[in-house]
Figure 1 (tube, rainbow, N blue to C red):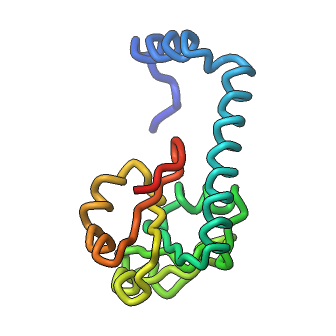
Figure 2 (tube, helix red, strand yellow; figure 1 turned 135 degrees about the vertical axis):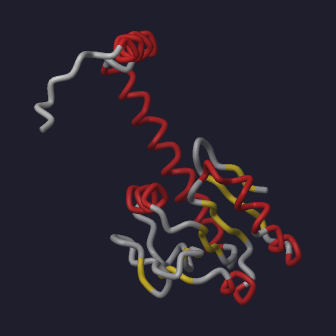
Length: 152
């Protein structure tokens, strides 16, 4: 039975040193993080409002926790984001928690022909762009919002 008492690995000390040098132990580090998070939020909201005013369709890709956290933090709802595409059948025909944005299958992208696809798993941007490159056929563009808003 594990009693929770273990020898501290040298890697722990190394990590603490790196974190200290990076300023992770300071209030300023988190104040800066808050400013960056606010910038991401406001840039995304501004983009979605502008797209809506211009009559553009925006869908998102990837119904995972990271993207859903961003959408809820920004207060994004179905009035600004048509739906979220996810390849996992277990998520389809359901709604994102909080925002109540519908989760749909990928074929809906071809059907709706959105002007923009917001890639929520921004770390997978290259992979998702390759997978959905057919949106270029109707002039669609990809959007990521982290670490900053990029449209292409």
